[in-house]
Length: 314
Image (cartoon, rainbow, N blue to C red; front, top):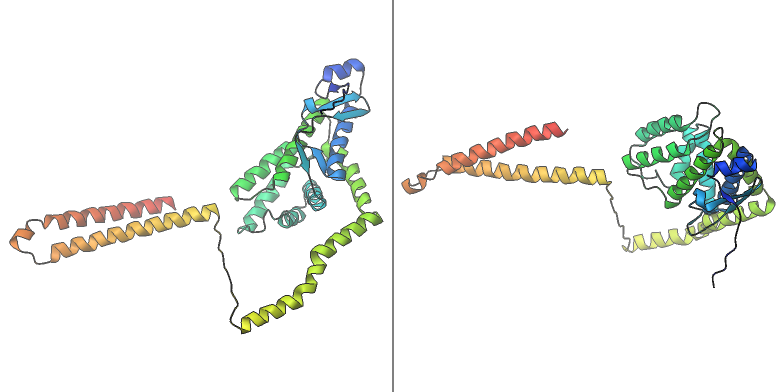
């Protein structure tokens, strides 16, 4: 059984209808953004496709979200990460933002950390507004995706869907009110979120979670250590080492192996041709000595071309 409810309202993108009703578009824009951010920051459950057709303005003070066919979910730890990341970028705190990316596992295995830090700092400067510290969410997402591609980073799926939703909401807000500032709307809500987390029941839940994740496993350390010593003494200790290469490193390694293989083949041809030329042959075999000369010349020419090509690719 499918049960539906009719909700009267107008699309947030219908600016003309709002003006005809005399509504304050700035108020509607602020209300819609607050409602969406509350879904993310307070409940961790949000409408992942908030386009104009899925958000209705019932009146100047009421917003209705419809069609939850595409939704997003954020655990409490992910909420903390996303909140800290956005706050760090907004405050242009590169070191704090880098620490959050590391805790999220995005740059945990990154080799060239210094280069990434420089590029990420440049990214923060580009996306931060010079007026009142607002963030351009569309630019932020595009820059983050470009940086992730350049450094072969794996962005969590929840981050990409969340950024997409934030871009849509920000675009609607600016369409209703050109002076709309995302950060000004989000700041009071962020304060409310932190106040909620400081409540005794929330603090107790956080401590309980950290106990089961971090503290309780420590009780098994003596038994695990004793087992390790025992297996080592009995010669039953086994170690497995797995080395993973980045796609770029794999391509370079493949190129190196191909060049080495070709150089060995050409070297063999050179040596074989030289032996044919220098060896003593019967009159009948001597008729074919020119093959050694031709092979030697061809191999030598191939080596020169290979060497020049290798220099050009560096």
